[in-house]
Length: 248
Image (tube, rainbow, N blue to C red; front, side, top):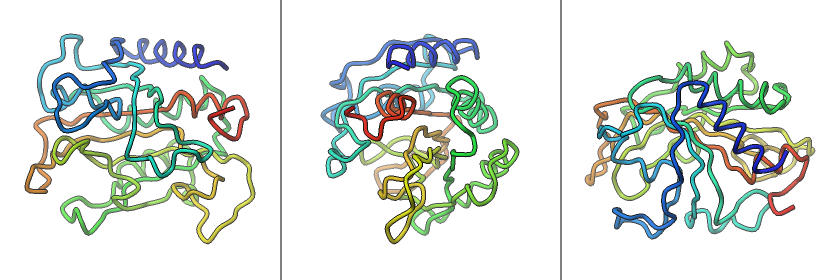
């Protein structure tokens, strides 16, 4: 599958789920002085995640050009780029975890044909830094219902399973990530999704954005619950083509 085919398949799938296709925003943010570049698909949508009405409605999908500098130490390994494209689908205060996780899994296994037995997932397992937010048991239950067994569901802390904010403050929340087993042998001190041994490649991230981190570092509930998802085009194409890196 080519990148062009993946983009079209993704956008068509979510358009059929009631999402409006929106264009990629500029790589240079127009109204955000906190960062130099658009770092993620959610970045241009921050006003709408905070409650402003989007002209296209509450379900959106797009392919967003991104330039990530906080991953700079990882660039040059098999799967990290500085510039990349992010496929995303968004719920602005409408559907929630059940739909987001189910559609992610359905797209990966039914539309792209990935082997469900090679998919592992991580969920937010709580973290002392955010003691007001506990384990995401709801996501665990949904994954089990979809057929992912306990041994392939990992509960991890903030460093692994909490997304955002992009700057010092803004919308954020726990996430669940999907990883594909590349078939490499286990190695290293810890070999699990989220570690850099190379066996597991992250292919999708569903963020459940229901918090706002204020400038004092406190986490407050947003007025609406949002779903923010992302899948890297280059990385997914690499997996689909049986490559072991994004550069090939």
